[in-house]
Length: 303
Ligand SMILES: Nc1ncnc2c1ncn2[C@@H]1O[C@H](COP(=O)(O)OP(=O)(O)OP(=O)(O)O)[C@@H](O)[C@H]1O
Image 1 (cartoon, rainbow, N blue to C red):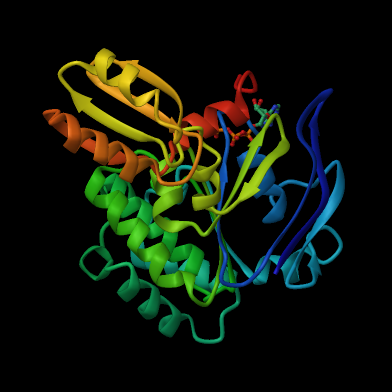
Image 2: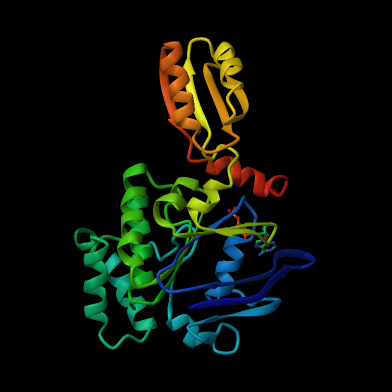
């Protein structure tokens, strides 16, 4: 598992990561979420031994990232932001190089497994700089999983990819999630909902929230609200506001949202619609809005 203990990074007088402590257990896919400049990449660089912490430390599978850095790094695969590699190398030569650098017992077998998992067979002899962005990202993922690490740290793995490539990378993460710890950083809220079972929101290097994606969404004031699209939302709002289940009504264009004061809001609203014979184009129970929760948590914290 990963244990971060009062992890701190200062650049000159500027504190990028401010006493961050958390634990990640096997089976968890942790989404590291935060506005630009929140300290996500810096935290990942410290966890993976690329940057020394100013104070505090972390342990990966019991290995201290400062005093036992090599053992900690052996247990981890890391995809840095933008998936940097050596553009002039072919995919095959690059993966062989990574295998040798990692001192693998059977680099050919490891390369074969990674190539198969990332479907890189068709581009093995192509130089990396001539690949599409999606393929470059796959090469980055291949080097990260080459030694079949228990812990994967992926910095914005789908950033800049088209929707199909995003979907593909998310499927891969899901595939690997059962037997690994995966930490991914992202700005994309739907990505967190799609692949993560835990979310940590950070802003200005500090932990602002730690929850499941569903728990995060349930913090929204829209959670269990009911939204209707109909012709005369104003009139409907005044009728629905009389219901004991309704705390408050809000109108936005043709959309009317009523917020719950008690259980059973949707059946109560449906009853009124049927009684009054309203012509309703849309009626939905709101799960909650992640973007609104994210804004609220990080409000005023973005650069
Ligand atoms: N080498 C450095 N020297 C000085 N300041 C730095 C350095 N690296 C990062 N920073 C600053 O530290 C803060 C955190 O940066 P970091 O890259 O960790 O944020 P992030 O959450 O990953 O942002 P993004 O989502 O934009 O990638 C930012 O204000 C950044 O400008």
